[in-house]
Length: 479
Image (cartoon, rainbow, N blue to C red; front, side, top):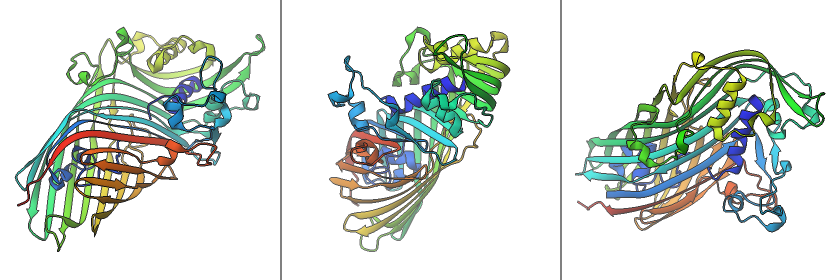
């Protein structure tokens, strides 16, 4: 069971077009518009724009500490379907060999995150010189594996056919899998509590109404398994689960009637999940002696994504406590399963879980994090920003988590143009990004290595990231 469900998530991370919400080349800037208030809602009062309308923006991100990407073509080529012909099969499908993903065997627990963040029509308006208001729409989808053992991930990667893995007992697998897809409608209010020619102290809060579309989790409290060869059938292999103690929850809302995920779910009364969330932040500016309209130094501190989505629906929500022994799983058990919801249904059948066992409800937490941002104005439009994002969720929580990171971002910007180079440490790996902004329109990545890396240039990335946005805006009127 652990094999097939984890393998699905693993393949999802590395073969789908879904690649966090960080926008590090844009969000710390005073020209970030509504993108900045996701980092800290108090930054709304710091905006250079009097009016900012986000037409649409999106971010796709993946990261892991288990494998390096070593294919002879880049992830960008793979996603855009521009892989050279010599790496394709006769039917045009890409021949993705196992050696294209190199294991990182260092004895540490393994984590992986795939995250999309689609930001719909959003508005931010300055209310005089001391306050601002924002209204935002957003769609977020995340899948994560946390705390998986190297031995289990090796089974995930190699499948059941690797003889080196046969009949080796494994008992240390206290991993978690969490997925959540939800829409949010946010209202941001920010105001300057202190404002003079020397300094400014602002506070901001965003309140979010959440519509949960689909979610799932597997919280494994104890799994003992072996990979065995089936003596009754040649070339057949299976996972023998000797003992499993876990909590399983998932929704079937999308599977029912083949529904799709769109921002319309904000207004769909049939969604199985409901919830509230909030961001709270403070911003302190030390004004520039040469230009009081700008700052010499800014410090921002925020707690983002407080809250949760409660999934409760007799028709679409499944939740079970599992305590079983002597179960056998093969790859063929899941041949007809469609998506994560279909896989979860197969698990329910194999484990003999019935409606009598179904609690019909669970709560999935938001990726609560501490956001610290320090920005130094070096003059002539040159800035250097330091950013810390720290996950605040416990390791066994039923929750999506913000991947913790440290970043330093030098940037050069004017009202008409901006460039930034985020330098990021994430999952104990270094990555460098790049972004460009023309007016309020931007394109960037927080992991350029992941977008261009391949075995040919020896970059061997452990993830990828890309973001872009289209907006219209007008600058603040000068006093």
